[in-house]
Image 1 (cartoon, rainbow, N blue to C red):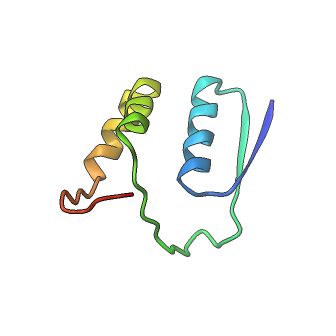
Image 2 (tube, rainbow, N blue to C red):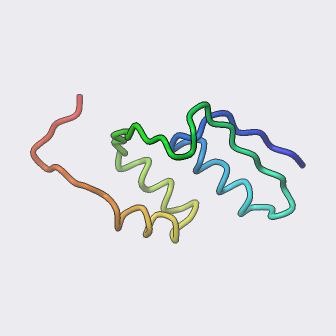
Length: 78
């Protein structure tokens, strides 16, 4: 099976990784409009529900992500 992922942001990259992990025979290609060496940075806020979902789907990836988290306890998200 061939899978084309449009966008190399956090959602696209995570989907691509999980799709390949679930079936290594899949041909997964990520298409990103920016060059590989261009980084614009992005701030991502995960709800507790989302973090629980990532933990359930892939505990190893969650552990790697969590090690890189920056936390700000004095910020409210509305």
